[in-house]
Length: 146
Image 1 (tube, rainbow, N blue to C red):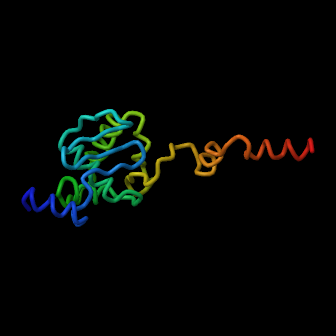
Image 2 (image 1 turned 180 degrees about the horizontal axis):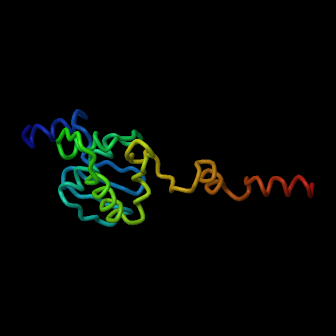
């Protein structure tokens, strides 16, 4: 597709987004750049493809075999640590956003579909975001006093 046709498609809303943000991670497909909390992350082409696939299937766990198929384009029947090594390298480069790439025990890996850091439950995040005047502790205190 020509750039003119892409531009027209973008105006009409038929071209997929050129930039995807999930939590602190942003992937800009048009420039092939990745950002973690607004800092640019330099990835190798293979690491970029790995992140691209994980983002495409965000929220879903992918087995090592599936990642080998989608990223490396191989149908390997052998057990390999290649995926694990590349995921570790990707996490290292993502820095504080590394928690977005989760290990799914007995299955493989998944890119989180939310932006809540590991160790924080959604309920904890909701409570932290709630104004102090409506917190449960303040409500209990007010009931005891009043």
